[in-house]
Image (cartoon, rainbow, N blue to C red):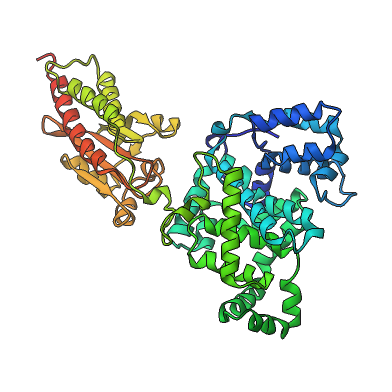
Length: 511
């Protein structure tokens, strides 16, 4: 297994390449959990149960041990149904070797996207415990492990491609685009099919793969059950309708469905508690438990609060927080919220850089010195991704002069402008174009793909700058792709004026 960063990995487009790449990644383990388990493995007084309990603090460690145990079974044994079985199968020595291969990181250094997904998995396990542990006590180990690991196929993707999952959330959950279309564009495959294939490859508990099989091939039954749950508030009538279709009742009452219900509740609660999506999972769970919806909702909220007390950490979202808000509140995706304005300290730095740009005579020794100051002024104004381009009219291209926040490969990227009507117009005279959600589709198609690929998201500022009456530079900047802070937009415009003044003063330095 190897660790990896998103920038170093090409995005696979087929099921086989996805499995090969995600299977090769080593998931990081929080340093505290890593140290506790390592100490326990070297303590002869510790039982397998105690070691397994310590491992539960890290979902990544649970997955890694289970995968390793199943891998070394050679396919001759059933997949391990609990951590204790996995530890017994591996032996403490081999478990220690596995632990030494896993990256140990401080919690804050583990990517947020991975921590967020694992928190959802922990929330799902807590929902499963609160809802099903008493009713299905004999099967509790299977329910717990399955509910915790149901989303595990997405964990290495969150490590390697957090931006892809963020874009999926923005487009599918918050903007309501077709999941099929978005997933084909971003991943080349359907996510649910990838999760199923990876779960089978890792030999995860059979209920995990059954859950994905249900989502892929048994949606008609799910719709039938949902209609019964939705059709009446009377629990007795609902049960009578379900009893009237015995094959459907047997299918729905399978214990394996508990892990799908728990994960459906945990995932849908991430956006809000009162969405139609969350209500559907509540109705299905209410019918499964033969429990009035209002009682079920109260129990689900108590479970969420218990999960937050045990698992919530700064920097990641737990839906239990929303239970303190007005009922119709929403957790908006960061790309739908305006970026924060620059701090007072940042604005002080911005004013200093602008003051340097406005000085006469010019304080800059060369063009690179000037554009470095311009880039730093834009960063201080609140911009997160910046490209400063100089015009090369001999080759009809824009040459990158300064970058910030974009891939380093952009520094050597020539951008042709002859075929772009937007750039042609900006190069005719100094002007500014602001791309937003309402006009992005119109203008984005008219920009060179080399430039557009550097800026994901819908919000972007492009400004051409003139010196001595002639456009000589183009500045492209954004705040991560989301809506821009109006303070930063104003500062961007003023910075552009300062850069123009600096360019003109610099051109006359020998006059």
